[in-house]
Structures are given as C-alpha cells and as structure tokens.
Image 1 (cartoon, helix red, strand yellow):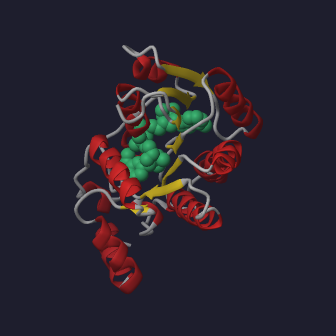
Image 2 (spheres, helix red, strand yellow):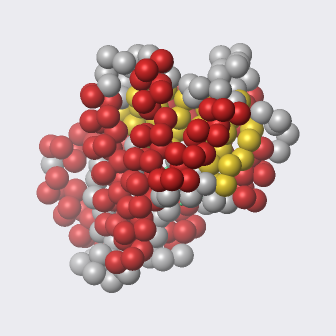
Length: 256
Ligand SMILES: NC(=O)c1ccc[n+]([C@@H]2O[C@H](COP(=O)([O-])OP(=O)(O)OC[C@H]3O[C@@H](n4cnc5c(N)ncnc54)[C@H](O)[C@@H]3O)[C@@H](O)[C@H]2O)c1
C-alpha cells in the first residue's frame, strides 16, 4: 500500500474531489486529516475508515489553520501530503456581484491556500519530502464572463503555487497544481444557484476520480501543471496563443 503510515491533510475533504482524494489515500493505508466547515460531509468521508479524522476548520482563518496543522502533527505525525481543495464558487457579473462575496471568494479559495501552505510547507521542506497539491481550475487559465470573482481566485492559486514550487524546487517536495474542467461535484450546484454562464452549460463534467488519478500521474512524472480531461491542455495552449479568439467565442455564447 503506497501510503501506508503516511499522513495527509486534505482541505475541503467533506465533499467532491477532496472527499474522493481522502478516501483513496485512506484505502491505501494513510492517516488522513480532513479540514472542512461541512461536518456532515466530513462524517460521510470518514464513514468506514478509522484512519480518517475530521477537523472543523475554516481555511480562511489563519490562526485556525495553523493551530489545526499543529494538532494534526502532534496527533498523527509529520505531514507527508497536503491537498488544498476547499473552495466556494458563486458566479455573477463583476459589477452586480456583492463585493463582500467577491472578497470572501478570495479569502477562502486563495487565502485558504496561503494559510495551509505556510502552516505545512516549512516542515515538509525541512524534512526534504512530501507532496503539495493545489486545486486551481481551467477557470484560472481561461477567463469566463459571469465568473470573474471565481476566475480571479483560481488565477491567484495558480500563480502562488507556481512561485511556491520554484522557490522550493530543490527541496525534495513534489508540487502539482491541477486545473480541472467542470467536474461532477456539489460545487456546480452552488454556481448554478447564482448565474449559469451559457458556455458552462455545454461542457460535460468529468468524474472526481479522473482528476485525482491525473494528479497522481503528474506527481510521478514530475509535471507541475495537471490538465485532467480531454480538451484542457488544448485550452491552455489556445489561451496563450489565441486569447482574442476565446474572448470572441465567450461574447458570442453569452450574447453580450
Ligand atoms: N467541480 C468543478 O467543476 C471544479 C472544476 C475545477 C476546479 N475545481 C476546484 O476543485 C476543488 C474541489 O472542488 P469540488 O468540486 O470538489 O468542491 P465541493 O464543493 O464538492 O467541495 C469543496 C469543499 O470545500 C469546503 N469549504 C468551503 N468553504 C470552506 C472554508 N471556508 N473552510 C473549509 N472548507 C470549506 C466545502 O464545505 C466543501 O466540502 C476546488 O478548489 C474547486 O475550485 C472544481
């Protein structure tokens, strides 16, 4: 069992891809600490595993995250793997979306990453080993109308993780920043309860397992950016080479 005796922290472990990742690691013998505000979801993740421990933590709260990581290290041992999956995804046109919601998006999606990185990575770097996984999104690569608040957070996640990786590239820690397309998880319901960009309606969602498998492959192959799904790598290339083409496509789809 690849992760036997290892310790992992998964934020957003109470739902979706965090839940899938936590259960897979537990099946492979790891001790898994899940951080989430969703206690019901965390109980579902831990069901059937006495090696999954739930910690109610708001990832946007620096003191809470640092205290919880210290608790995990004293209760379970030094951390070998971190995956930062916690996020929210309300949509809306930037000048129509409540600024407090836009700032909350940044606090959770980006601030949560900063909090977990600064709480876990110094120890991992000192030990010279471990895996650090950030969840960005294709929305952090290709900007979308009506999704600005969320896209901004995922762009920030990607940039922060890239610099983190390069600042520590000789440390022995493996880094992966994953940029999934739409994935079939409860996060989409949140977005759809606000606004539904027409472009997203046509995309077929992939399964969480496909994303987690792709992250594992990229870690093994030393690839920093992971692009699960069929069109994602092409989308990345298109954004770099033909940004105006993509914008024209988006304006046409939304009709403004
Ligand atoms: N689902 C998609 O289509 C998709 C696509 C690309 C990227 N992503 C990214 O993948 C990651 C996982 O998304 P998912 O689809 O599994 O989402 P999800 O909604 O299923 O799970 C996210 C979890 O984060 C938790 N969370 C929210 N705010 C929190 C806070 N302040 N503190 C602690 N936990 C908090 C939620 O309670 C939830 O359990 C996210 O970073 C998301 O942005 C998702």
